[in-house]
Image (cartoon, rainbow, N blue to C red; front, top):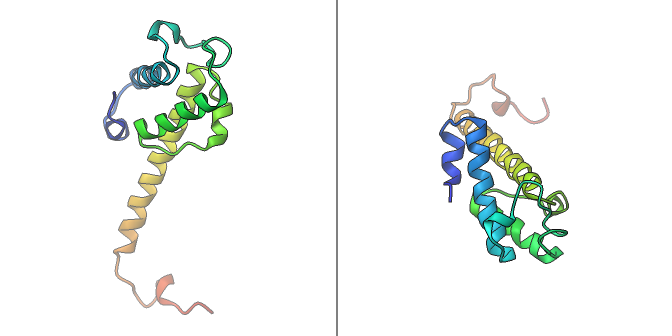
Length: 127
């Protein structure tokens, strides 16, 4: 399976990244639904074509969170109707993680800057 942290730091073409994510999601879907990889195509619907029930779709979502090291809202389970949609959900979660990670780094840098008499943090709250 692709290392999720490498997806955040190593530049790749969008197609290669999407292909790697699609491959990893296919692996998860096959494991959770006990199907073969050739059965999981981009437009193959998890419920209608592969017989997934609601709990299995949630199991896919939770497994994807662990596999990619991201947080995915359970409401996104309704969007994950097929492989293509699952890839979109994971890409969005990775983008959110990347944005959070970069804002954390900016916040850490500014938190280590010394306070000066004119800085906002040094002023009393009532000013």
